[in-house]
Amino acid sequence: MYLVGGNKVDAYKVFDEMPERNQVTWNVMITGLTNLGEFEKALCLLEKMPNRTVVSWTTIIDGYARVNKPKEAILLFSRMVACDAIEPNEITILAILPAVWNLGDQRMCESVHAYVAKRAFVPFDIRVTNSLIDAYAKCGCVQSALKFFIEIPNERKNLVSWTTMISAFAMHGMGKEAVSMFKDMARLGLRPNRVTMISVLNACSHGGLAEEEFLEFFNKMVSEYKITPDVKHYGCLVDMLRRKGRLEEAEKIALEIPIDQKAVVWRMLLGACSVYDDPEMAERVTKKLMELEESHGGDYVLMSNVFCGTGRYTDAQRFRKLMDVRGVVKLPGHSQLT
Image 1 (cartoon, rainbow, N blue to C red):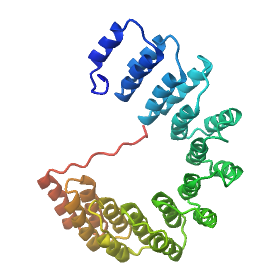
Image 2 (tube, helix red, strand yellow):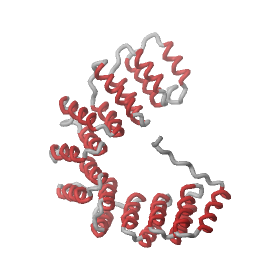
Image 3 (cartoon, rainbow, N blue to C red):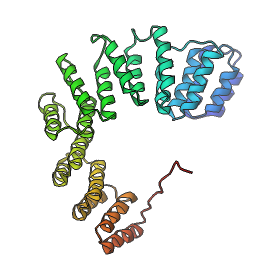
Image 4 (cartoon, rainbow, N blue to C red):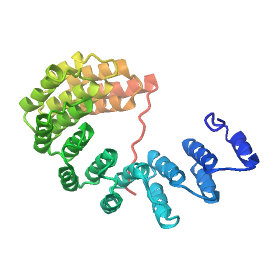
């Protein structure tokens, strides 16, 4: 109770004063500290725990993976298996796989796959299956993901399985393969959901497919699958049009989006204006963005750059001054180069 409210002092006091502590007590304390981001303290308790369990280890592994500390998560996973000789369960595997693909570690992905196959997790838990497909794809091994996907009997695959594979193809610019996979899924009678449609629309846009095919899927989503497009679906449509250089049509679509928070779509279009040197549209788009998010410094800078790129230096300076008047700050980018 104390840890839920963030009261670590009282939680420690109650814990220390307990005459006896069972595994549940230790795990509750470790979980609470992990949820508060107190990983060092959680690890300290784990070291002191008389009989560590898979739950204890998995809690901290999952915590590290969730806060984007994949190396720490994988190190703990290895310690759990090597030092405590504790076998991971399905929840542990689901916790460690995001850390694996976060690092892009293909060999680690293959090792986890071999482990779960040996322990027979895969035949019984579709969540592990889908996570492995996703991990292979995000490690850059789309062919390994496909090979594993094909090995799974169709009766075991669910919508998440198919969507994950379609998304994998989209991620790697394999538009034709994604569309083919979508059609295979449809032939089996599975109806796509919103996420599936985002994946296939992204595949069409990034994979360089004809706009007719994209529009066919978009229209089918609305008419046949009865899915109302949200900002992500419209974003895919605007992205496809801007890639084709059809900025006026993209602007028209952006104006018609029945969603208030659509800055991401306008920002996408502003970037296209920069590529195609269209300062007039860029200024219109920037005004729309300012209505939504007046303090986003990047929009002013990009608009200024569009003007500079077309020789309109006075207008560029005007936007720079507008930033100063409104107190807008452009946060500096971060480079990985040293």
